[in-house]
Length: 517
Image (cartoon, rainbow, N blue to C red; front, side, top):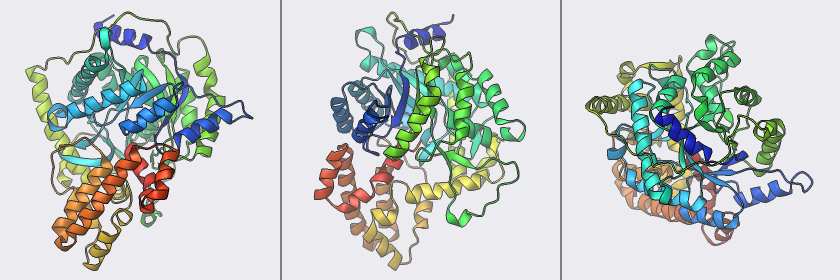
């Protein structure tokens, strides 16, 4: 047994079995109401929930939840640690993100922390949803090196006398219409797992998007695709499984788009959408695989759904799958382990440094290509999955992402938008402004705050006479955002009675912007 495998197995062994849980947003829906309803469902018997995985949120809010729910097992879904990026340590505020993650993990008492193997920022461009890595051998090596760096940093901050912090779980990301690379997705993660002792999260909906947008559906059934994928994916590293909704994103103007005979619907990852039955069929197939020996938990990702819908889906989920996680045998490993040395960032040789430099340019092409800034950049990228019309579909989606996520601009900046309309300035010009040039990432990633600041800058340049108006509305939004994010549950309702009602019309959009995965 090599050192990477031994280190992983020792770390995995001390993680208790979690059972079936929920991955949730701290703010939407009301988390305390959700727990109360789960506890009183089924005629008062309750619907058991093994754990809650909480997406990155304000520290004060996490602390309130921890105090109010002392008996709940919590885990953490981090963000802002862009492990796919070759310049992660130099182009982004890594130390600030690590300090934040350490504080949040300490508050929640997490056994693990999940992070997408994807990025919302690359080469100076920022996005609202995750962009998967370029699937190449060089990119896998960079991911492994960055994972070592992150795990080692958090071990030193949180490991105590044992030098062991919560285990980083790298989540296979969704494909949103396309993928770049020359390496199959399971092979990419096998290379990462061979180089670093991290755990993995296998997301069933994300797996469906791999079948859909790499074109695998054209040559094999979904069942055969899943079977072949599982044979190549490092299942022994899977600590957690996620299941979430899928939905079609098509604005009304594109509602007549034709889907050819036999072509799967163009679903993308959508946590607020119902979970289609096909994902539970896929989950059955995954859970039956003998290679899944270290699984600790299976969670429905339900952030932003209504409480009745969450309870209904989770109840059906438990009835169907409780047998898998409650059975004795290979799924889940108990026991204890000796102290495991903290992971240390490995030294990077000249070949790896050269590959990293090449990847910086490749990711710059990637960002410019998908944003529509440089159409020719697509030709310089290896295409793993570029279905006909896929980049056009993504750019339509991207327009909605920038203009509507986190709140429609007309709701966020009502007076400023009226001034722009009177001056004949179309809001679509903001999209071109957003991607006009690369900008350094100087503050921790927060899509809502980024959008507020970018729009203020856009107005200052496009309509200087409205600059002061935009600045006032931007400051009001920042203050309201901070206030609301520090409060949880009915505390928000108390503020609602005292503060500007407009702030609370944006709450659902803020939640979507926070947890867009």
